[in-house]
Amino acid sequence: MSKNKVFKLITASFLVIFFCGNAYPASKEILKVDWSFTGLTGKFDRASLQRGYQVYKEVCSSCHSMKYLSYRNLGQKGGPEFSLEEVKAIAASYEIEDGPNSEGEMFTRPGRPSDHFKNPYPNDKASIAANGGAYPPDMSVLVKARPGGANYIYSVLMGYEEKPVDFILEEGVYYNKYMDGNKIKMMNPLSVDLIEYTDGTSASVDQMSKDVTTFLTWAAEPHLEARHKTGTKVMIYLILLATLVYLSMKKIWLRIDTEK
Image 1: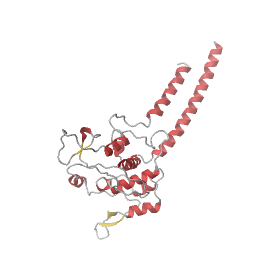
Image 2: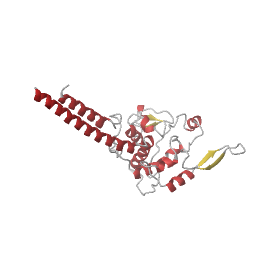
Image 3: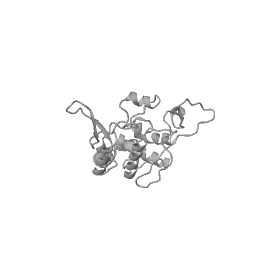
Image 4: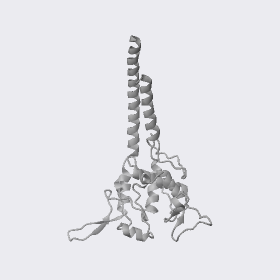
């Protein structure tokens, strides 16, 4: 293999890694947002993460669980980064079932940072019964589980509209232009000024949708920022290595050409 072919192969490999490594599945039918956390050096907007948790807590948590998150995760680096006191206060605001005690009985206590997020329902059947036969999915990894990722979640939240005149909806079903079949059993969860942000940000539907989507993306990829930092270091290392390999190959081929 010639030196030019070797160099082209190495360059092509880097381009594939750089442009495809962080891509979400493509879709022409959903909204596209320029998220701060995408790209090789993407980072989460800390204020948006904290607002997103507020949206989840005040709106989404009444139906949707996040069983893979603990309250202490809200204070970890790369996440919402609430202070330790804030994390303790958030956890303590929930009553957690524990036990059995020394008498063999279950009891409730204030939550601790080590507790997992409290599930709004005791079991899956209860959640289905409370939501008209539709299972409200756990939100811990929802962004990773849906084609389109963050853009899909954001689009669904923004996609509620009045149905077309000739469009048929069953009872308890709502029209959403970004859902498959344009039908969804979850009623529109957001409306203007539905919540009052603690930082004073205006609670538009667009703002709440972006904030909660950012929070859900972090929940699904809590080590995203650390992974991006590692990826950057690896890319720099590989570029340096490729340069050394190329220079070495060039020197070797120069000797061969000279001998000829």
